[in-house]
Length: 387
Ligand SMILES: Cc1cc2nc3c(=O)[nH]c(=O)nc-3n(C[C@H](O)[C@H](O)[C@H](O)COP(=O)(O)O)c2cc1C
Image (cartoon, rainbow, N blue to C red; front, side):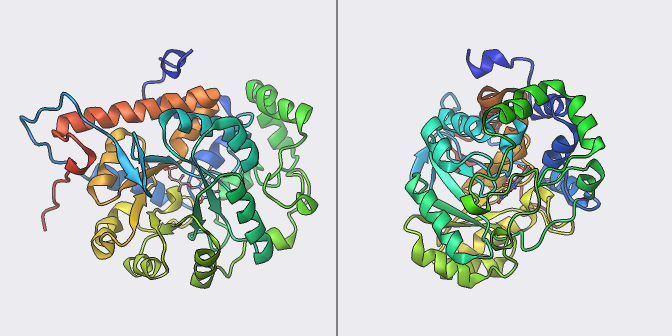
């Protein structure tokens, strides 16, 4: 069955989101879906994207448009990368493999999170996808470098250092829902699971019957605490002292492409250039971390102008339509990362659900380009805001 025939009732990302909401326990759905603190920035991301108008050229032959892009030296049919999302494997059994398969089918990379439930080795073996690896630096740098050796050996040639999560974000809904990692038993969480039997059977019982309570697959074996037990060892908790010195170290040690994710300042983009970084992701982490952060759309044009072609720019946060992809490209991004949209897809139907979402975004992008008279991605233009 193709993705298109399996989920014909899902017509856009919002449909996938609603289906995911019905399927997942509330604590897990909100972990995926919501923002942080007062959730000002999640709404603002949407408003800022909506405010960007694209400029249509008329009477252009759009019988054959191309969404082909080149990211970090590789040509791909769409300017997309599936973003790293921790615990995708809780949303669907082997959810990371499902996301990677959908990415492979679409011909785009899948970025594996440090906090993945499925190991990069298994994802590589079972998906055939072009894998990138996202790094959260652990306090113990030696262990961090060992993790990178593992990622490289599994075939990841692009390393994405996430730079925008210096401390733990404040997400009160997780506390209210009793949802946290490590997973903790509570009557509220138990009731939540009981009310979502499809998820309980397809994900939780299946995990218990095969590999046990889901764990962070990349944590060193001797420290790999089950999510159901006490907090992870201090050595592999996330470092709060990650600086440009770490970027320098990574640049020396990593043979492949190096990407810094979560840049929102022109100065930081320029510092990334001077550290030999190959690309940055202009992102506010999907509005999950800092509620008073600017949206990527506000800073992207200035960053793009300042860095020129010294490094490549990707962007993310808030993409729900193909037109949003076009908007980020019009502001200066070369590629776009997709976080929640494909997670909703995987929650409703594994690889096929995620593939359905990618198909929809691709079709919407092509429609937008046709309407804009854009034969290729570089033809997409914004309407310049009046001063
Ligand atoms: C459930 C969830 C988990 C995430 N985990 C990570 C992570 O482990 N590492 C990381 O760099 N970003 C993580 N992100 C952020 C995404 O990589 C991406 O920046 C963000 O989701 C983009 O916004 P969007 O969801 O609106 O597309 C996560 C996002 C979500 C929704």
